[in-house]
Image: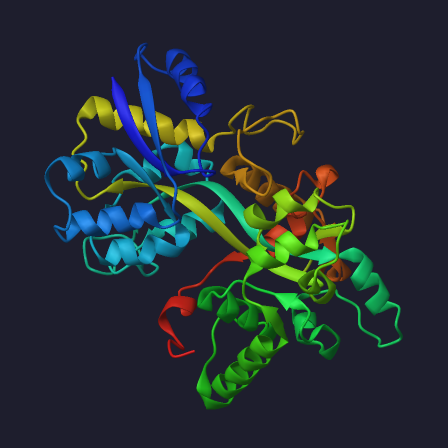
Length: 391
């Protein structure tokens, strides 16, 4: 038996294939199973392939080559559009599986949607019914990569500035010293988070939002985080850009691999929380799984969400190798952090002051935020995709 899995370079690891064969021998009656992993190079290419096939833009051999996966990877940014365009199928019976019971609550909310791609309204067969459209297996978060030497000098200059939360990106001391991706989605969410809101209502809030968004754009030195990172990591020569960019904001899988390139660089997440992102396994609209393929696909979903390289309930130590690069983690780790936060809250161990300041992302923290910060974090909301389009 063979299943075809389409993914993205850096999102899934080829070493999972051998691990999956062993997993199947130990956990199923299928003793000779192979998963073939097809890794795309370009972010968003999985969605583009699904859309092109749906619209009839690819046919014949090219369609067979590009669109024959039993499962495919979609980033959470493309999930709503893929559902609306009929590019993916709902995973019927997902709520009854073992892997769903171990899924973080934030992830369950992320992928439970109606047929228009919006959060569903419960069971039934109407248009507003909720279905499971994807299975998150890898996650990361929005973080800051800081030139610590520059920031220390700035914070000791007597200006009163201290970088401790997202809203500090608006401080006059950082004007022209920030790099952020030119992403409407991120700019909107950063602005909303600085306002302490998930969305804005009413004329006055909309005006405040637009004003803050415009001021954030004015703080930015460059919207090319790639150029900023190349300059920030340099210890030998100081380029103009590295002299001027003190803080780069981007996803952890883009920033954390750079954090070890220079002893001047530190990666942080505000204790008040951050934005999360996830890659999800989805069933393409053209897939017609047999009963045996459906069983094997279900086992693949269990394997890739139950703690790759170690048990899901095991200790969070660095020896549990997932094959993912720094800045990305398997979903079992997010589930464990979510459980730890709930246990600490029930034990009364979470203090209000814990929401202040920055949490360092390093080897001691396993390059992930503390559980309390995770509890205050959320995936990007639908507001980013549906409001304030002419930004």
